[in-house]
Amino acid sequence: MFEFLQTVFDYLNYPFVSIGEIGISALGLVKFAVVFWVGFYLGALFRRRINRIEIKTLSGENRAILANLGYYAIAIGTIIVGLTALGINLSSLAVIAGAVSVGVGFGLQNIVSNFISGIILMFEKTIRVGDLIELPSRDRGRVTRINMRSTIVTTANNIDIIVPNQTFITQNIINLTLSDNIQRISVPFGVAYGSDIDRVKRTVLDRVTASALVFVRDPKYALSVRLTALGASSLDFVLVVYISVGIGDTPSYEYDFLPLIYDALNEAKIAIPYPQLDVHFQHAS
Image (tube, rainbow, N blue to C red):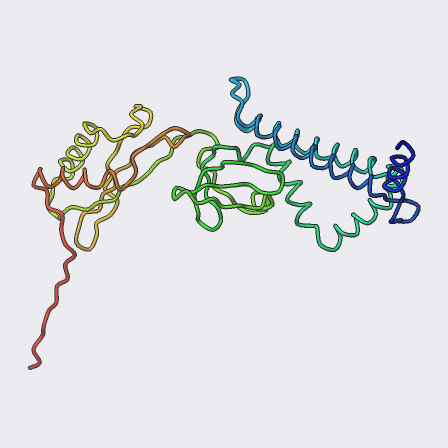
């Protein structure tokens, strides 16, 4: 029985493929597959656990950095251990490194660039998990995850956009929450010529202040109504209001203020004009 097992072991350990001076056996492939699966499973498990952990002294972006760096450290260690289990002498990896460099030169530039850009983003922190950003495509959303190769941005319509990290380094990105979570919005409206300007301002400000709409009520970010233009058929105003767009905030937006403004002007008998066009006919003599 022992001799039979020894024969099977020798057969499995016999190199059936040779790459240069490196012999690869079936047993080596099995070891490599097991190490590969276990290592990457542990790496993914580590990243999930770190992303879910709640530590007051650890911010969201630092948690993402720790999770990704730990994952890739485990992945690199898994590859090294797997290659050793496969029977590859690590001192001979210079040949493999040369092949990888050729591959990078021919088709992996973008992958390497995105990888390096991801590391820069994680340490530079100009884009962080939870930030509200606007992409060059004009799509606006919240950063939900920063990976080594790409970043996931979730829009208000719950659509996930996968953005290569290189985009954040080479193109102009608008970060609406980089320095703080306060954002200014402007709500335009118009009234008829002949309306009392001060009365219009007072009517709108009083109604918005007394409403239950969610906006920043700090005196530093005071509400204001401004006359912006003498339009073709109306006096054009804008309500300037500040909202907080941080994680967990549910602010009111332009479409929430417009019905309030309309009701306030309507109750105050302040006319909202229709566009008018005067046409003059001249009879030929």
